[in-house]
Image 1 (cartoon, rainbow, N blue to C red):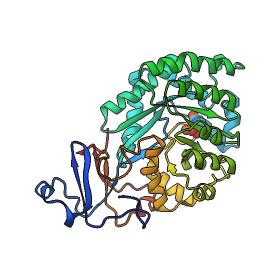
Image 2: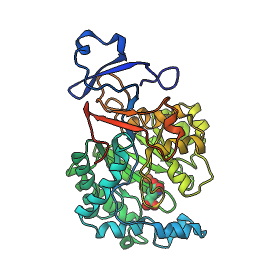
Image 3: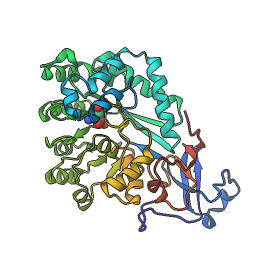
Image 4: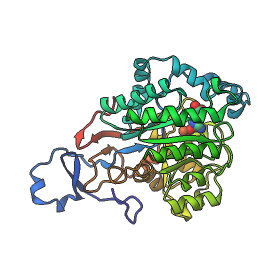
Length: 394
Ligand code: NIG
Ligand code: FE
């Protein structure tokens, strides 16, 4: 499926040829070059093939649950109040620090399996529930192991600047020094981070602290991305764009000026309708401005225990259409080609085009809008990773 005039790039009665894990040819079956005809390996029986889906923003390696905080929020306590009272991210940090690598691997592979069952072939996984060098490293090692064990590409992101750990209470600048001078260099030297992220927010880190981290990341040659403008407008998306970020994520409170900066810098917008829904947010991300300035809009689960305890990327398509008014074609592009861009993988995945890795999902649907239309449904009937039939579970 390419970006065509119909918004989907539909090829009716199509065929895909793959060689050595890469797409070699795609087009109408009647036009399949002679050499390929002799070697038909999979008859998709009239199903629809899309690029393998890409979940470009998750925190899926963690331990414990925050169902108790969910109950508190239903009683009227806000997400920020819970965080300021020592719960929130920090409560997951306590559970994650206490969990063994084995246990983290066990809990996380179940989450990854649920994503794979919906045709996901690439997942981004962030750290951020360790907040010390040992645990951040453990989380990213687990993420790497998931990538080796499952037929799915895992891109890792170091999110040491996710929250202030209790042992640094009142000393946020010192914690950022630890992140920049100890954690990030160690994690980079171990080859465990493909990118660097931070939470720029009143309950997270200031734009100045974020800038220090970004400068360090860039000095190490690592791309950056940012949790920006989720609960208030600190100019995070604009800051991310100034640093040439791959993506700015959340964006509910982003200003027009930040959207302009993203457009100029080529920064992808990652929309997270699961967190919007689960926090009962009412301020919508600036969809019209993003559209107008042609900022690519990706969609992701944000799978995490506090704001989006969800392992369904298909559900995000439905939420993005019903809550954010994306079209089903925009939503599908958001979990394929735009999600690839958010990870810097646009020459590797996210489209069915020659030269890209042969990652595909096969659906039993009658038209592509069905992927966004039905919620709680899973019409995925096949998954191909690098050209081979891949399990739909871990
Ligand atoms: O993307 N906003 C910061 N990080 C996560 C939530 C983490 C948590 O509450 O555990 C998010 O929404
Ligand atoms: Fe997140």
